[in-house]
Length: 411
Image 1: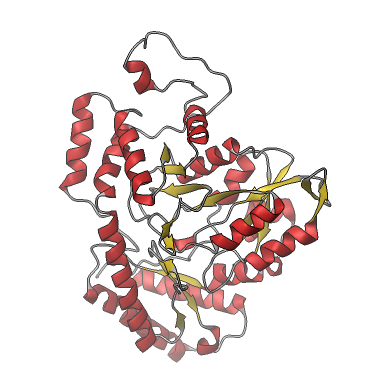
Image 2 (image 1 turned 135 degrees about the vertical axis):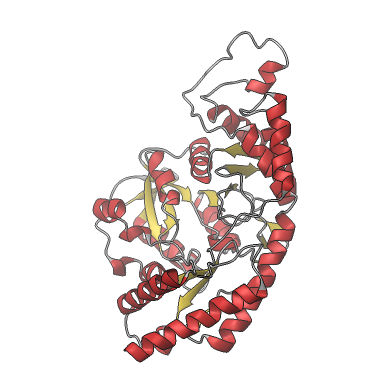
């Protein structure tokens, strides 16, 4: 049976060689190679500082804590995103306040964002206070979903108008741009992921990017238990005494082994993105020709989509279905059949308000965030990776066409 995975990391001999250097050096924990990797990513994205971490989740948590988020505060976040975004807010002791998204881009709806602020908060002593809970509104955590930046310009405007912080969840968006400006350089702390499903990987890993050296210094201290001196700095002299610890921090350190993989990967980043954009265009053409039941992802004017994932939506009208719930049932059967055939697909991501913890804690209903609910039920991620061929893509689309036709015959 022909197997098409949803993604495959792109490795060559370069990763093995870089890791071998680190192993030979004897320094395998966080050290000089992490520092080199931080610099390489920062330079690529056009920012001055990168702070490497164990994952994008810990990067988000680190950025939020360093920016003052904590108990008694609210942070507004999209309802359609991987649960890690909301979880990082909860980890600080703060409360996530959900906002709906656009079905066309999967990104935060800035009109709904402004509406929530105006409806749910009032000014007291120069701060926005939640009318029901009394929590202070700290800021916004927009997500750049699937490799496409949100309307970050409008998000920043709303934040500035209301005196709010912004921390960007750019887990999927390394290399993405708006009007030639890379994510990470929009004036906020921005967090990326190096999970194997991302454009480049270190196995697990993340990074916070910033142009604020003071914030970068504080985050480097927090990620190492609150240590005022890094291990590699201690190794250069007077390393026999432990450094001062002025606050309780975390162990969020990336290893030099991971960073070695990252150093090889970052050299491939532009080629990987170029290849994914080419393959996304091929999918666009094939789907337009053969699959009217699918709605292809869009790239708004001025945006540079990296297609970390190629995510479509089901077209209910073309399928003759009336409700999102019906569409979700159909989607799940379609993906199950494709899995039987050997083609791996995925739901785009989930509507967080329908996940157990958040649904039970806040009493959410599906209709509270209808677009997020629709994206949850109707999104389909197609296979996309560097090693894919034109023939692979045609096989994927033709197989979907055959399965849909077969299901219609059954109906």
